[in-house]
Length: 292
Ligand code: FES
Image (cartoon, rainbow, N blue to C red; front, side, top):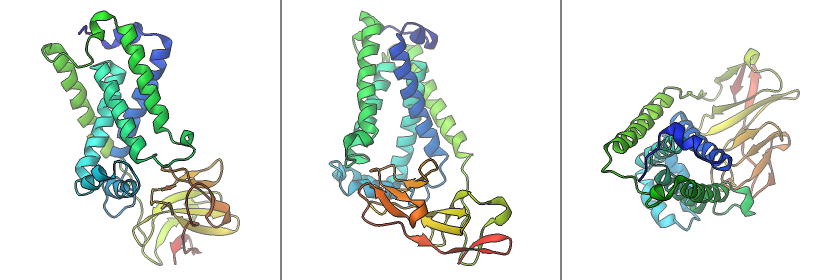
């Protein structure tokens, strides 16, 4: 297989190929680093725990027989996922074993589609099908533009010592990047009943923050003109962790697209969630916001 330097691979490719490569490489790299720096990802007490996520996905996925086996090895699966994502991102951006990395990326997107976004309806609300199509398009573009020799096989030439060194370099960089990202884990405050969540002065009207509720689950705290209130951050559909959408003032589920109305008691705005979000009792006490 012909070997190209990183700069050469970018220079010799069309604009369309570069756009796809940049988007997919950067997204996979970010996805892996985000997991490595997520304090909930390996925390068994959290609903963001990889084991809890796999348990939720296993309920209705066509891959449930595989996912159920992964639950007891969730930490190992978590490391493989985040290191795999970082390595694929680095390989795609650097052009090392590019075709193999693209095939691996397409494989990951297929697995995510069959597990995480399988029940998203309509299908275009789930991102994994779109990523899978992007990977397939990138694969054929790269093969077309790489020249006859390089096109022969997507498998890296392991008889080429320099290629092996570059692949080891990508793997090593992935491990170092994951460990470095882990240093940025933010610890989320865990108040007990009657205990402070945050200083009032640091949380003015209009503020939002995530905290860990006294039962150990993630929750969102809000302060508006009418006071303070808090919702569970666990989706009532299948337990995925919600994110706050400031544009719509809603809590949105990344798994199957449910949305909850922050201004209206956590009511379901859309998606398959069967019930509004549970609330937590919070109050202003002196100079603090506390759990009640
Ligand atoms: S877990 Fe399915 S919509 Fe949230």
